[in-house]
Length: 122
Image 1: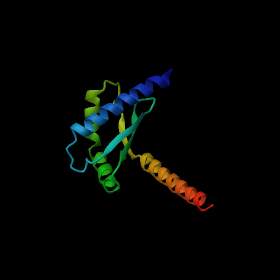
Image 2: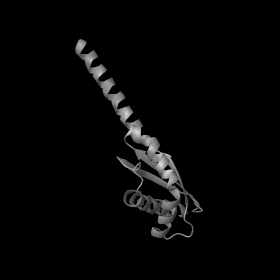
Image 3: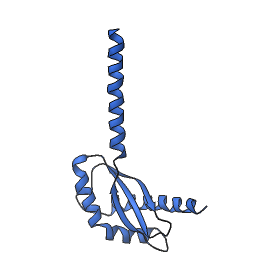
Image 4: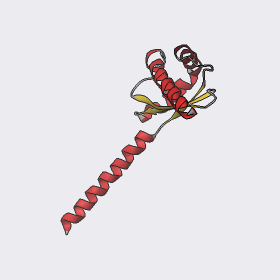
């Protein structure tokens, strides 16, 4: 029962963070194609692990540095937008699941091509 509440809070925090970063963070390093696939708030609402997925590999390091330097501003804005007893401390982490999924899809395509080539030889 308590986990449903935490899941709802995490989703609300994720939506609010997405809006804050897109609309209010003016750092030029924050840009390109990115998303927040997940935000996980701890049960005591003190910390929030925010997973950021950045599509361009050359912009990942700059994006993460910009978010970490703006984390105080982002946290303050989050406190204004989401009504919680405590505004969680934000921990930004790079999420590479999309990149990994693309790699697996490429490996499967190559394997399918190899199997088709072997079938045509026989």
